Image 1 (cartoon, rainbow, N blue to C red):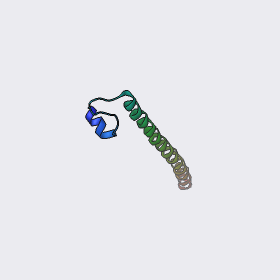
Image 2: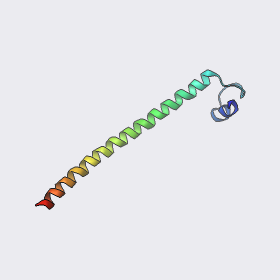
Image 3: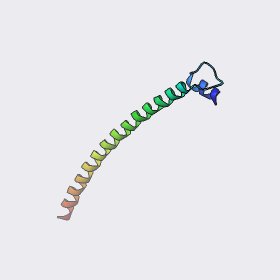
Image 4: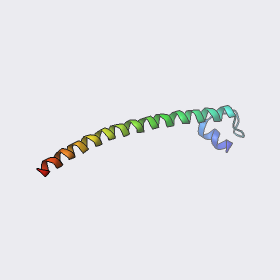
Length: 68
């Protein structure tokens, strides 16, 4: 596992152990990237919610016209 960690992240002075500071740094970087991705998904979700509200209003208007 330490060898895989060293190969993947190029951290540490040896590939036979993982220093906690290295693991913590990788974990923090991962959390930051996940936060960016989550923010992007939330922004996209808000945009889709706005579009959905617009489409629902248009549909309601069309249905009202058809009902006449």
